Every structure is written in C-alpha cells, then in structure tokens.
Picture 1: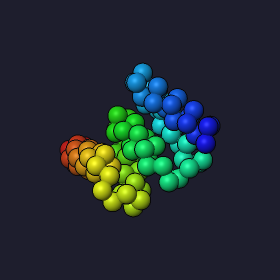
Picture 2: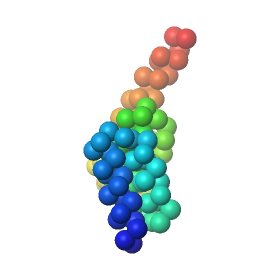
Picture 3: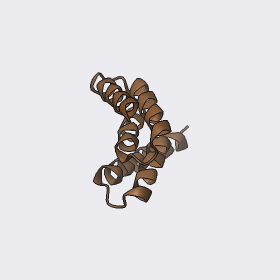
Picture 4: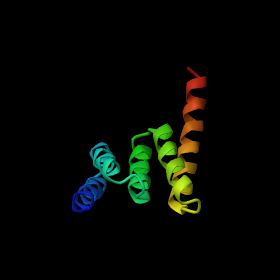
Amino acid sequence: MEKFKRLKNEGNDFVKAGEYEEAAKKYSECMKLNTEECTVYTNRALCYLKLYKYEEAKRDCDHVLQLEDSNVKAFYRRALAYRGLQVSKKNMAGI
C-alpha cells in the first residue's frame, strides 16, 4: 500500500508540472497494485484528455462508473472524452 501511495503522489506531482505522459505512466503502475482505486483511473483519464487520447480517457471513466455508478469526475471526464471524439471525427471527415 505504501508503494501505491508513493506512485500516486508521483503521478500527482507530474500532473501539477504538466507532464501528463509521465503522470499517466505512474497511474498505470498504481493500477497494477490496485484495480479498485477509482481516483487513479479518473486521474489517468485527465492525463489522457490533456494528451488528446479520448478513447483511452473514455475507457478509464467507463471502468470507474462500473465500480462507482455516481462518480461525478468520471461522468464529467467521460463527457469531455465524448466531445473530443466527436471533434476528432469531424476533423477526420474533412481530410
């Protein structure tokens, strides 16, 4: 559990520094230790949104909502992911 907390804090520090790719890696390491901790999924979803990885963000939010069907952050970030996916599809249609 101590390693989990350390990795999560490192991820949080990377987010604060705007290093979203590194933060996502730390949160992914956390998930190997505990798949039931929703905050690391919503945090990684935030990173994916910042990196324009909307499908990955949506997947993380879907996972959280299976565990906690009223998680507000997961609903909000999934909505942002859906919006990003729609914008991406519109841009691809013009190519």
